[in-house]
Amino acid sequence: MQIQWYPGHMTKAIRQMQEDIKLIDLVIELVDARVPWSSRNPDIDQLGKQKARLILMNKADLAEEGQTAAWMAFFQEKGYFAAKADARNKGNMKAVTQVIQEACREKTERDRKRGILNRPVRAMIVGIPNVGKSTFINTYAGKACTKTGNKPGVTKGKQWIRLNKQVELLDTPGILWPKFEDPAVGLHLACIGSVKDEILNIDELALELIGILLEKYPGVLTARYGVDEALDAPRLLMEVARNRNCIKRGDELDYSKAAALIVEEFRSGKLGRITLEFPKKE
Ligand code: G4P
Image (cartoon, rainbow, N blue to C red; front, side, top):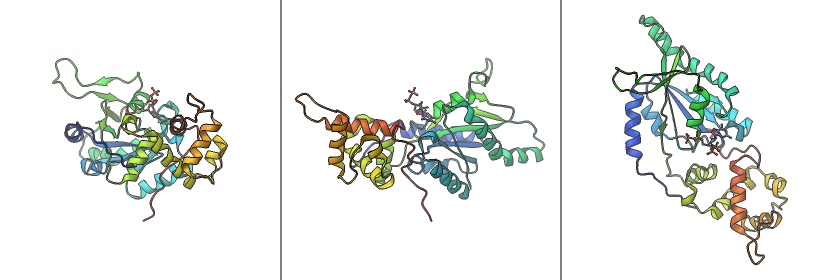
């Protein structure tokens, strides 16, 4: 399955981000914990050079815990700070704050040596569409936080949200688009819903997803749909249609309905906690 997708306003967004990044000390990069590889954009390494870097594995509630831990170790080994979260859950944010503070320690220390005290560290959220950037900002900053900047009489500037004494967050996230050269990247992003469904063939996507699940998570499809995993993907999809009563007019099996069902149930976690990519051993 070839997925070709490239939004037109990319250049403008990158230019905006290049400007914003000059203003900040820490880049918080959100990735989807189910596909940490594909949901990163390599441009960010260039854009965020000389900044403290934190990779936040979001939607960790949908990913396999052991794999998320392995990915965190992988990123840490490469010199990034790493954390995991379910951005919808405020309870997760304490641990995130701790890592943010750790990631900023060097900068705070440098400021202190130069006699600059109590200057908050400025951070920015970046990530590809649908990884949870807005959700994270809303949960993390909450309503209680005061917005700074754009005060009357002050030159129109960026909106900053004061998270606590040490950290201010730029309130608009940087949206990056993923790289699509590797077809597996496109496929994995389609599976998690980061590519617009309108341009996808959901029947084909479901067949690909079935293939991945049979290989990486044997037993999951049997447990959910009572199907025989010895079948090939198209036959297995037929079985799902039959067992889930996906029927078209004229009593025919509705292949497309079953395909959409599998994709939706994977995305919403009904098939269990599933990670599609494992860290590469180098
Ligand atoms: P974006 O700004 O990066 O584009 O992403 P956004 O926050 O809009 O989040 C995209 C979808 O992912 C939303 O669901 C959001 O609720 C969900 N989401 C964000 N973080 C997490 C997480 O950690 N775990 C899980 N399970 N879901 C998360 P939606 O269905 O598009 O919207 P809604 O129904 O929640 O309003």
